[in-house]
Image 1 (cartoon, rainbow, N blue to C red):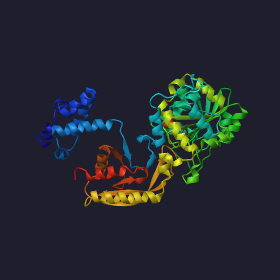
Image 2 (cartoon, rainbow, N blue to C red):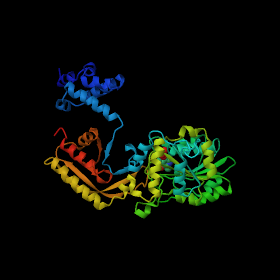
Image 3 (cartoon, rainbow, N blue to C red):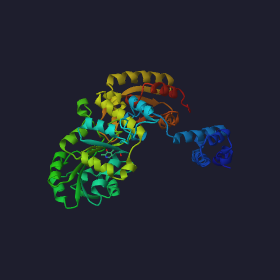
Amino acid sequence: MSTKDRLRRVIPAVDKLLNHCLIRSLIETGVARETVLRLIRSTLEQLRRLSDDELTRLDLSLDHLAQLVVTHLEAQSLQRVINGTGIILHTGLGRAPLSLNAIETIEELSGYCSLEINIQSGRRGSRDLHVAELLVALTGAEAGLVVNNNAAALLLILNTFAQNREVIVSRGQLVEIGGSFRLPDVMRASGAKLIEVGTTNRTYCRDYEEAIGPETAILLKVHTSNFKQIGFVAEVPLLEMVTLAAAHELLVIDDIGSGALFDLTKYDLGSEPTAQASIATGADLVTFSADKLVGGPQGGIIVGKRDLIAQLKENPLMRALRIDKLRLAALQATLRSYLSGKLTELPVWKMALRPLSEIKRAAETLAAAIEIRLKNEANVTMQDGASQLGGGSLPGEEIPTLLVAIEFFHLDVEKVAEQLRMGDPAIFTRISNGKLLIDLRTLHPEDHGIIIERFGNLSNR
Ligand SMILES: *Cc1c(COP(=O)(O)O)cnc(C)c1O
């Protein structure tokens, strides 16, 4: 028998693991037997695929394998993670972290609350009345509405105003945002007919004008968010679209995507369209996400003309796209931080605006502590780097930061990153040029102790 076969025969059978006390207690605490079986099979399958070398070094005892299955189960559950990537709006890690106020408001309103009752009259009220008022105050629009996310906002608008009619969009703005969100697909789902005009890099006002016909309902502008065109490019300014639409009695819808609520250039963070500017320029409806630059919970915000918002509310789809009390609570608290001028109450802005000097101090302390844990095993240094706002905002725009850079002498850096990820809580880092990088900008102070401890406990040394 070859070593390979001998090694593989040591891998236990599914039944043996299923009867282990750790696994049995998983099933007793309510994890479905099928789920556990699937995990055991995939864990054993992973072992069989390992090289002889790797297999020899592994602890193949039942206890250890049962623990592996538990670890795999935990890795599948939704759990808190530490974000050392420096990407502030990390879509994979839940986009905007909520503010303390938002969390407290969620807690306060999680029981009974005045969701759809007017306290004064005792009669039925509207669930997003107060949030809509905050949006009006912030953006200067006549009215506002909140739905499940920005994709839902577009779906609702197109379905309400352009079902079986035509919507004109520039070919330069037919974007894929990520995941499975492609603008043309959402438009099709809404029942609207997409009319593409212009070319990928240049669209002129006359392109829109020539495409307008008896079936046209909407001129749609979409912020290209996650990519940037440079060079020989031309986009039609919103104002020209508004003027053209007015002459033909069409609606102008502006999807600004990440939803900046103030002028980012003030803080040297590059330029993103703001909801205020879009409303002031005359867009009929403006849509954006609540969990990108707004820094709130997942949601799609629509602001604009009062009569149009009223029509949106009448659409039966509204019932399917509305948001729940917990997210409304969080959004209410988030918007209040803007109105009170306390931007840095919001983690997104606190992180984006964190001074480099403060990041440097934190990086020095963290690097020194990690170095003690990894003595003789790694070279720990600090290096200049770039954080990103992320979430499709400000592509190409980078925020200077300081990174803790760890170069291991013997350990495989990919394996270390995996160990950090598989621990509790999971720690996400970056790897570049063979070094493990931790960006201090997206860390909370309480994360440091956990990170330091985990470097002290790396296995396979
Ligand atoms: C992110 C984005 C969307 C999708 O928003 P969700 O809130 O994720 O549904 C739509 N349009 C633009 C321009 C975006 O940037």
